[in-house]
Length: 206
Image (cartoon, rainbow, N blue to C red):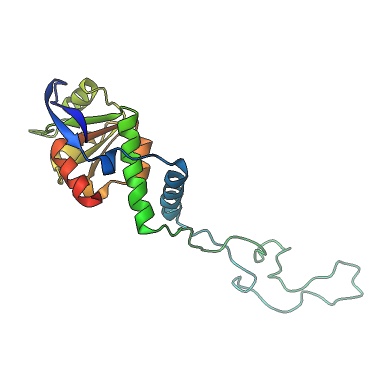
């Protein structure tokens, strides 16, 4: 079991805590991380791009003029795709971009993402982070003192004061243990975990 230092908001080491090797110290495979991150990003796509087909455009279905004898090119009805205001021939249709990833693969990728942060020494464990009031400047100072200006902060429960204080700090995101995901963990250079949240993560992934 790996042991990491637990620091306070001032950056001083106050204790140490153990990390479950089966979650925070496993081999990292980029292919699995790529698969899960790609699926996450694909699921965010709306897939709502659409056009009006020939049958969707309002207009007469009668042939504009006779086939022969006018000296002009042959024309169908006014809804033809080659005419201005006509239907679109090969435009996009609404579609689902989501990709199916097995539950055990998603769980494994989450463990790998956490392990990658530990191995890269980008994990910071803080004993507690409590805000007496909503103060962005105060929280920004704490984060700067922890050398985690661009970081993902994992908490155990919903803390409205903490979330409101972090809203206007660029590069900082607050997530609860049940909301952690591979994309956000890998996106932010630093991972800050409140010490009580470690138990929640190990309970979820153990």
